[in-house]
Image (cartoon, rainbow, N blue to C red; front, side, top):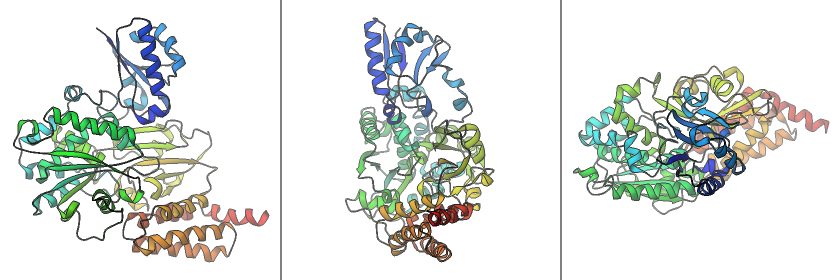
Length: 518
């Protein structure tokens, strides 16, 4: 029996040298005449330990990391294939504290299976949810998803079941399922990880959505900056067709569903669902006015479900285990699990999936291990570049949509970026305006002009030009953008700006003092 060696092919791991490790490992086992199979799996999400190499042993999978190509010979000589001890040994993978404490439902297979093996997918519970859905009527599927409490994981937190019910009830000769994979928030990588590490779960979720709503065609809208995910998803679609998971008769049933991967140029605004549809239809990504809602008139003017990658990837476990099983995790109106992406100045950056309810302080101090620099944490931005900055005084806030909204913040796509005490929050506020100005589609005045004026105002504060008036103007600009913008790009830019101004006023005052002293 051949040994199985797992080396991630995930883009994050590849960036850290996983391909070089895989090449060296193949050379080394061949030179030794060892009968070994190298599996390029997805990442487990422990990026400070990547490339993390695992071997299958009688006791379970044993991990080593971070591994460099120069470590390979020493690992093999020490008995790595039998799980022997070594300075890079991390022990049994499932016992690593960062992994052991998680509740992995959506990411249950990520890093465990061969991403492009449909038999591996089935062996680890894949397609069970789809098989259950094929034995149910559309209303019952929608009811199960609704009862689970699943909300959109792309940022808005809109109940998934309500969106599906709207499309089910809408009239139209053709309906569509669109997967929003335009993951553009800084510090986020969950969509990419699951598409590269468990692509069939996204496909399965889309098919179930199609059966539930009467849609027979689907599209995944991916950004061009994700070449690994594009390649894996395209191949996964081909494999799903070959095994009758996609096509005219899904798993031999009366239901038809097929899909394709579409690649966008990477405009941030195309993460907004109507701008995405414009791009998908071959036009420039510009936000549409609503109504009509995409659920009524979406892709090509037809009823369309638009869900985020993680929303769709969460559906198979709900259809497999049931609504109650999923709803039992979480708190308040935030049910199930959330894959938190930890980035920035931290010791342990990576993906951590757990039930809603853990506090921000637990995530930053305990799970992430504090700052990599060793300096005190100053601010944590939650929800991407348009998310609010939370100071330590708010670290008792539980990870819950309503709890964050109550503190003038948002969970968004659940990315958190940590900053230490050296961060200049006036610079961060300026960056938010600048980011919005660069990424704005230009359709509405508050976003287009407000963001540009915001940069000017931040510079005036920095230069000590009538600071009190400038701060009042910045506040007024944010108010106009928040309530006057067509979409969340302009509407959410005030979150980082006003939170920086509210929680770190000394950075706005200190800049004036510094400039005057110089």
